[in-house]
Length: 389
Picture (cartoon, rainbow, N blue to C red):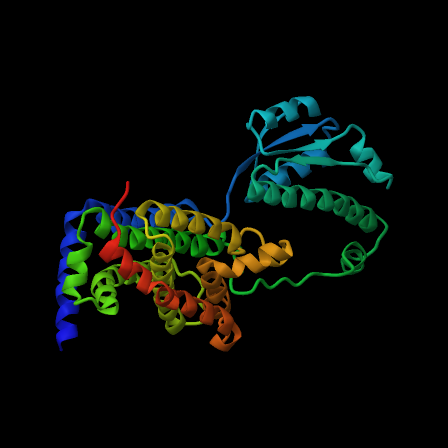
């Protein structure tokens, strides 16, 4: 009972600190909510639409104009200009007026009708990976459809039926089934990694900041005295209010994306709740561990910032970890966001049992327990260290 009373008094002390210091309000409520709304609304259409494309049509026949109209009808592409030469279109791309252009040389229709394989070129800017990939796909599809349309008209003129024509033009028909996200909604892919990654960044920083300010503002000995020198009591009393706030934020975000935006979640609510709990506790564990390694406000927050920023590259969402060098593949296991993302992909997104992701579950649990390695060093710092700016 005495320990519970000490924890309660420490919690009330921490809540006063949270209330009086505006940094906590902004970093634990305002900024995370702003980030959540920013990313989910920025990609609310799922895919970028009507990206500007140019045309260089030197043939200018009914066949090539039909190809241009079909390209303009695609969801991702919008024809915004026609250029007299490839050089003019290239300059427009360099000025960022268009993302890509389709080059149709003179004589294309004539060569198509005589089956002489004309060359149609398309150029796209890969400075933006998503726009370049989508426009490349559209222009490649149009190039294929152009030759197929001519071939279909020729075979019909020879009296060949539509079924035989399609079997000749498309001998293998692809039956595509995209698992869990048939709409190819990039909001589903990116917001479920970027937003939790930013949340982890804030949790890392606030956790290290909260301990470091005990030294900075000369409150460390009072903190230890109220806990009667027991570090477990001191940590529980200090971070339970933080944990409740972070859990409210994380579960609010999960309700928003899964309940309001209807992101796919084959695994169900149980895995979602477990994932949110692991995310918060593992992030707090890493923040405490970072301060224990470097009992300095400035150094610990620098380590947390560096680790959180690197997590976005090492999570495996933008670039698959299996495609990285062996050393980077090994290093990826040291980032909580990597394990969070894999656990989300396996259990929530695809609906596989937790046993399939047991290693990532164990890794997040290990991050939760990291403070046990440095708890004595933190206690020594609180009792004996002097804050140095």
